[in-house]
Amino acid sequence: LLSGLAGSALTYLIAAPNQPSLGASGAIFGLLGATAVLMRRMNYDMRPVLILLALNLVFTFTMGGIAWEAHVGGLVAGALIAVGMVHAPRERRTAVQAGTCALVLLVSVVIIIARTMSLT
Image (cartoon, rainbow, N blue to C red; front, side):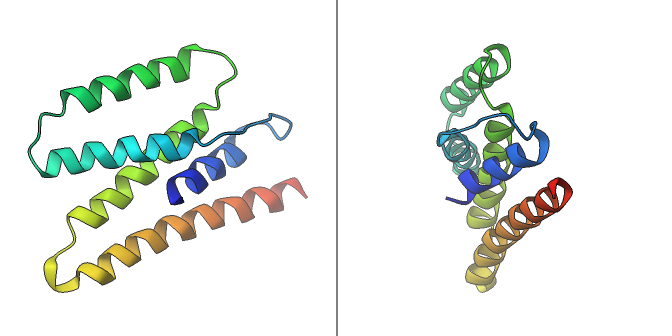
């Protein structure tokens, strides 16, 4: 959910005001980013997720009509949230995990408010 919001916020910030955008691709890229972080943490073979991510990024930047901002925003948010989730120290795990999610939410809301103020 937060990855989708962050992707939409970045699209809202960077894209032209009249550029249409729809879909849940930011959230999907957030899941890919989180999967990469989790696989790295568990020392799994990351090649499959990195290949999938690379192919999707190639499509994102080479095909027209795709909101690359949503993909990048969702990917960054998903990876950041996953880092907070899997690397939180045991003694402060809940606080770090909640704080990471709150920080991503806060940054997304600030971006949305800033862009809305600049348009009005």
